[in-house]
Image (tube, rainbow, N blue to C red; front, side):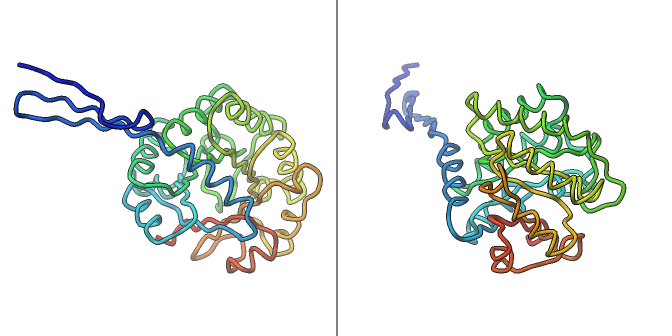
Length: 276
C-alpha cells in the first residue's frame, strides 16, 4: 500500500496528511495556546478593571463560561470533586485525575485563561514542583497552591488545619521555582489561616507568599469587608500583587459583594464557585 506524507501548514501549527491509496487520514497537530492564555491572564491582571470567572468542572462547563464572555475560568477542586465523584472537596481527587480533567477542559476551549486548583501541591516541595509543571503542561494559565494540611478540607468548613508558616512558604517557593525553571504558569498562593488561626497570621502569610514570588494572593474565608480591605491594603512585597476574592454563592464566611464593590476594595479578580 502506497503511503505519501507531506506537510500542509506552517511550522507553528503543522498539518501532516498521510494518503493511504484512495483513503486520506489527516492528523492535525496544533500549536499549544497555553502560552497565549498565560500571557492573556497576566495582561488582564494588569488592567484597571476586576476580572470575573465562574468555576468549571469539566469541558462543557468551561466552554459555556468561555462562550458567555467571562474573563477567565477556575477549575476548582470543590466543583471537580462534586462532578467526578459526587463527593466533597476533602482531598479525594488525585493529582493525575486533576491533570487529566484539566487537559480536557483546556483542549475544549479556545483561548480563555483557566486557573487550576492545585490544592496543597500533593506532597512536599518536590511534589509541588512536579504539580506545577504538570498543570502547565495540561494548559492551565494559573495554578492555586494552598497551605492546608493533607488531606485538606473544603474552604468554608470548621476545623481546618494549616501547616506551619515556614512549610507554607516553602510550598510557594517551590511553585515559583518551577515557574522560573520554565513552567509557563502563574502562581496563585492561598492561605486558609484566617479561619484556622487568625487574621493577623493570614495577612503575615500572604505577605510572605508575595516575598516568595507569588503572582496572585488569596486569603480564604475573610469574615468582613474590613478584613477584605486589610488584605487588599497590605504593604511591602504584597502591595503590588493582585488579590483574589471568592464569592461563595448561597452562603460562606466572606460577605457577598458585587464586582464593582470588590474592585473598590482593591481586588483584581473574583471567582464564583457555584454560578454555573
